Length: 83
Image (tube, rainbow, N blue to C red; front, side, top):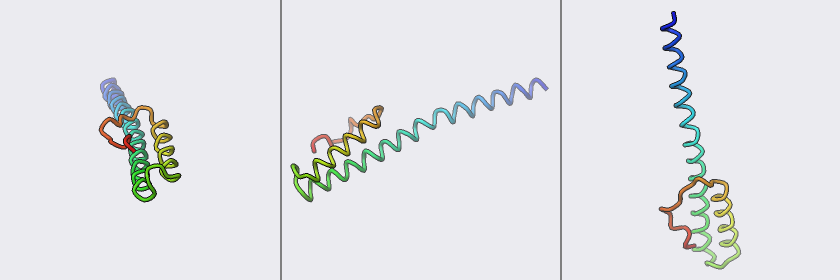
């Protein structure tokens, strides 16, 4: 009986470890998706209305807001900062 309890405890710890590590990854994916969408909207606004347009400034603000809400996001590989 104690062997069965030991196995169950190990299984529960393993499941808890897997669930605990997958939750931040999902949050990071949501952040990344939100930032990519904001970058796409900014790029479209710049192409459509110009670099210094009201729409582009609004989209820049939205992009900065998305980045601010995701402080752990590493956007080093993106070139959206040139907008």
